[in-house]
Length: 41
Ligand SMILES: [Zn+2]
Image 1: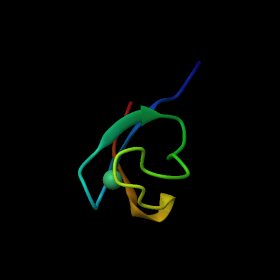
Image 2: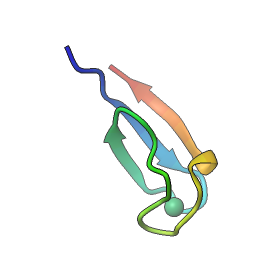
Image 3: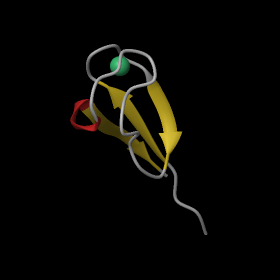
Image 4: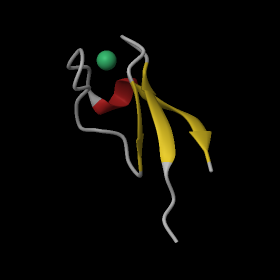
């Protein structure tokens, strides 16, 4: 069973579905600390 979470960048609003937040926002380059968990399933 895989668990996927939705992470959102606080700086630019970019969101992605992943197990872990990205090391860097692919859109604005913000560090991982800028990502917040917005949903889990
Ligand atoms: Zn961003």
